[in-house]
Image (cartoon, rainbow, N blue to C red; front, top):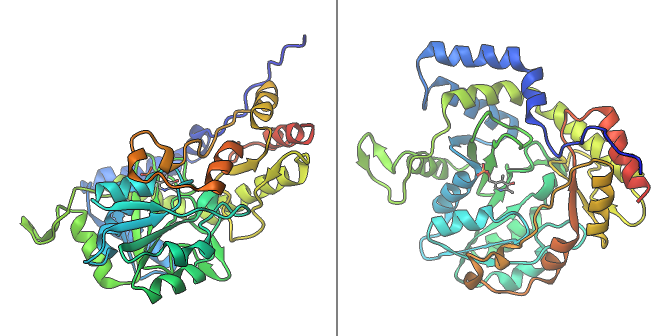
Length: 367
Ligand SMILES: *Cc1c(COP(=O)(O)O)cnc(C)c1O
């Protein structure tokens, strides 16, 4: 048997981007070191302003992670007399973690077969009177159609939070992801399309009262220094080093999103009929992940591994089947449950070489 000694194609390799940008990153970090200001200073303010302008929202509040952004956004917009968060169960569990930390209950709604996003047709029935917030996750980088969700929710006084951790820069029908609901949560975890050199997150909103609540919650609930005026606060701040890195990287976001789309669309063109590659046709999708759907997952994993291509599954365990949460909401979500057995992620990140992309394409072609 012939031994394949080609290097593996990784699902991600953060060193490549960091190495290519090393001089810029060092300059940016020196600026912060020289300034002597490390938390809630001018770099954070500048990043908040520039991201706000990019998104077309009035206020951006930097926090310590995407999960914190979800938690603080939920706390800030949950109507006073309600305590249930409604969301999807196929998006990695972050919204559930955030809601449970905030002391809310979670209920789930199934997703669309084609888009893997919240099925708005099921909303009306799911919006019982205890539901106070719906979290819409723009999964894998695909912006959901928010119009029907906003219409259904506004009618019954339910707030909407967008989870944009995977979708920064996606524009659907002229609407930027994160700009049209009550609040939106972003993550700058290093693998995200806009990644920091560590953890980071942000809440975006055009409602000044929501922004003010999140600003207070991220700093112990202080309404002024050492005065806790708001319950439920914590310490969740975006530090100056991360903010400076993010301001620098924001300038190339659209370009790297375009490269991601190119890669996904190449796979889509090449893939055999036993594999469906979720399409990233236009700016409505920022191709955070390259996700395939197949009835032959273990066979495909074996095939790709033989070609030395790494794979991952986003996500193998739906929230309502997570061992720690199971008693929380054992609902029946047929589409979510089936897709969890069919999805497979292949390498998609901007620094993949053309040769690596060709290897993945060729392997998908001959499956
Ligand atoms: C990564 C991610 C989060 C959480 O972000 P962290 O910064 O890792 O806390 C939330 N939602 C989705 C969909 C994500 O992919």
